[in-house]
Image (cartoon, rainbow, N blue to C red; front, top):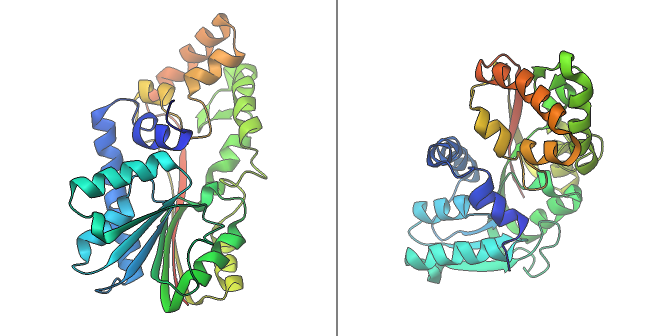
Length: 290
């Protein structure tokens, strides 16, 4: 039986089998981890709940900073929990870890006021019931407990997707009809107006935290509009942006004829390799106290 989509993407598909890309991704994520943990104000003896732990980046980072403390790794993927447990065993940390199969919006296996810190990274983008998740974060935290999260604000770049003449920030006017066929594949899987990955922004995060009861809420938004920083065509073609969508290569295979595929690649590949596009991205750090 194969791995689920979450572990398959997190451990394999997001790197496309390229060790250099894997290193580049981790070089980006380590400072994110450090910022999330810094905002959490860890203290010796803390019990930290790593919601949507994935490969354990946040949780193992917390264990490295605490001589005394426990991390609860929670995720909806048993495969990823098994992976994290294997890493904990190899590092001799099993006695300081717990593993919980649970979605962010239903942490009912945990008692009220049972953890000191709730930390997440790129988790709410997959959660439809975001307000319910914030209420669960609040419920399981002790009085004075800290919430620290990091989320991409994908709505910031969604307007580029809605422009017919643009595909991932590149001008595809000469092949616009072909581009629309490919974009329809992604729109069907992740509608801009309703998909959890796209239907919120930083203001919503603050509102969710307030309505859940948090106080002393802080949010930092980092947004940029730049030329693309990667002209790697193979990566663009074969690495999906998230676990729920196909690669560009897979999407073209679904909806294009061989001639359409040839024409689309002939137009788009030179633009990507020359980095002649627009890249819009935004991320938010939110931290708060119960």
